[in-house]
Length: 237
Figure 1 (cartoon, rainbow, N blue to C red):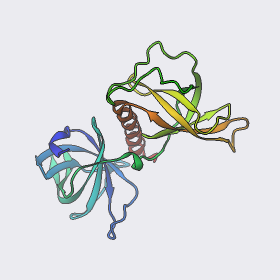
Figure 2 (cartoon, helix red, strand yellow):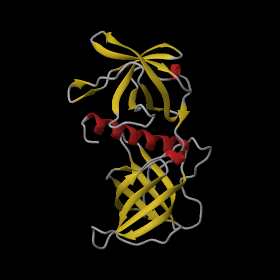
Figure 3 (tube, helix red, strand yellow):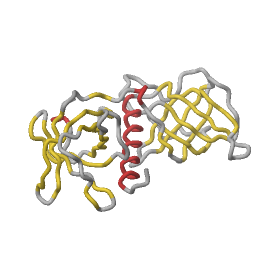
Figure 4 (spheres, rainbow, N blue to C red):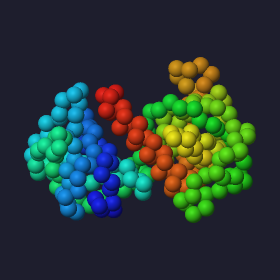
């Protein structure tokens, strides 16, 4: 992955570093405005509550973005500030290689959405995962599922609220209805099913993805990233 592989207009999450190298809060939203060379880019200065966020020259930052190949980040340094065609921009020197955010680094995003869920036997799931890239075929294959609500979602697993308690290691299938009519079907394994503290007769059930194509996992990561960007733009997280 190189900067030339990233489209202009791609949304960036800017994570600033403190003087001691720790990540500062909050994070800010920006986008790629121009690629000057393989180590230099211009990005839009972040705005919060209608005001431009002042970022000092030489300030180091981590830039996270979604690409069709997954979620990536690189580190940069602010080397110039200016205005280009009515857009206040920051010139960033890229000071690290691009790294893909791996599964162990997935974090759970609190999000409530309708999910189709069912237990399955030990036989292979109907929606086979062939080469790791093909999306699951779902149309006409939703028999036997029940509707539940999610609590949180990540690229590696899902938390749902169920009316029944399930055994650890029970195998299951879920269908997630993402945006733009994108549905993904995943085979998973129950890793948690505990009585909810705040909802009588309900269970906090967690599962990890056991069979999922790379394309479907990337679709989930993109869904989470896009939702986060929208919430951060509204100042809600």
